[in-house]
Image 1 (tube, rainbow, N blue to C red):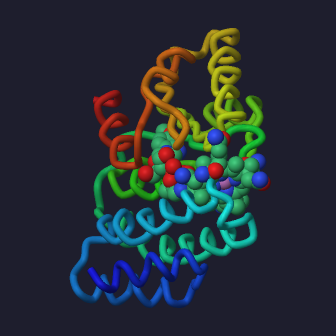
Image 2: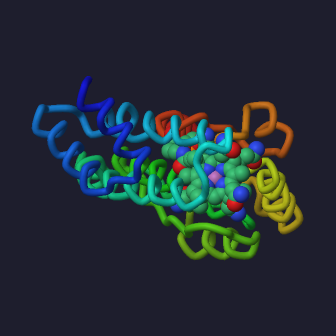
Length: 210
Ligand code: B1M
């Protein structure tokens, strides 16, 4: 627990190598990769988020914290994907136009892959055309969209409305997520479900695929 607190501080300070070291130590102690992710890394980023909101941290510091988080995640990624689960579905995921936050959707990608989904992560700042091209090209069952800003989350509705216009809305399961969303928003824009976190995204995807 002391190490986890230290790692939260290190994440706050954007110390990439210390985070990598901490992840490896916890793995050595037998911690499950998912536990390390949620308790040390996401836990640390939550504190960063609060101080960012309160004007104590600024973009450059938060970028360093994000870099440290990504370094920790990349150690855990192969371990989460290593479950050997058979492929159960195909998903395209991306952050919406105007939004460059990608840590959450990278985490969702890792967890979905670990659960046996094939995932095409199309990155950040996606206009509707990119989503639609990707779901066709990848022959996806599921479209996942992520938004972290109250100003970008309405764009999810643009994507869903465009799918409706093209008559393809019901060919895909549409899941949405990101810190400012909630269930009501998901329903209002016509998504199939809102996913609070990566674990819920996996459970929800499995339910819809079954
Ligand atoms: Co930004 N930022 N940021 N930021 N940033 C927030 C989101 C903010 C809440 C911070 C704050 O004020 N407290 C705030 C938004 C306020 C609002 O809209 N009401 C904010 C702001 C204002 C901004 C800028 C405008 C700041 C500025 O420039 N003045 C700017 C906007 C840039 C843009 O996008 N156009 C900006 C920039 C940045 C950085 C570049 C510095 C950096 C991003 C780096 C990166 O992603 N590569 C950054 C960061 C790191 C954050 C916070 C601190 C952390 C986000 C994060 O990675 N969390 C964030 C504070 C916060 O969220 N409380 C903040 C960890 C991650 C694992 O959680 O992304 O929520 P999350 O994902 C979760 C779930 O939400 C869910 O599962 C994930 C795992 O459990 N989920 C999904 C997410 N997507 C899903 C998709 C699914 C399913 C589930 O599909 C099926």
